[in-house]
Image (tube, rainbow, N blue to C red):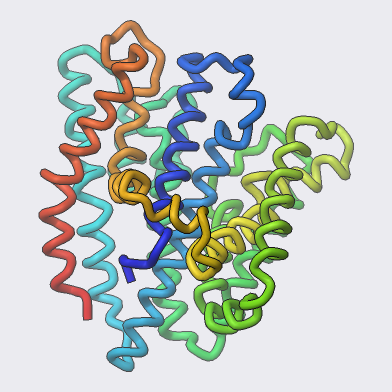
Length: 347
């Protein structure tokens, strides 16, 4: 399942979006630059994370379905072992490096920020001043989601097609509730963000039916999905959020919202199962495939190098070089040995 075509290319685009967003956020890339204005969607970090979430939900659920098909069972024990070996080592190595840098006086991270990062509770115990571990909010949401989803998928087999819809509905209810405080209420939590993970799960469950239905409709699908995402991006930049309808459309249909999640899922299906055209070729080039392979390491380390400071490692373009070196070290020295160990727990 980890050899699905185009998947690494999609991961590559996602991590590039996240990195570009943080470079813009800290003024390393000029926000008023012409190319930034034209390609605004590629400077929206939340959109990039949403793509990761949909891919993650689709891939994890596909793995569960594949395991059940091959063995007529699902080993929750093996799932959690694989998940731990995939996610924990590289992340805790990052925190160890952070701790050493803090002892040397280069950075500062509060005790609460360390605690919430180590325990994967970042979105619960928030430290608004912390940047270096701030991106762990997405990791903590994923880990909490995958504590529950495999159990629900296995135990409630008769309802596995319904559960993702219930999770999406729960997210809608939460988003409507928070309208009264919009845009000040915190929404980087599992209630708000599980919808895109659930959308990925939903598309995996109905994969065969969706692909069969779309065999002669790929052109319409990509046009609608792309048009929807571009419209949502335009909406966020130009529609007033002080009106109720503006608020409602924003939280339900922004580039990091539910409508976008469904459009992203359609885009992913087009990329994987659609025509083998120039887009499919691009996603499967060696460069994008390799960047996608490093995407988790790049996501972990980009906080340290996209932060604006007087340190040499934060000076462009050297910061990108240092980021690549850190990601390469993390992947080959930390991740890869554990990935080999992880393979022992795959049926």
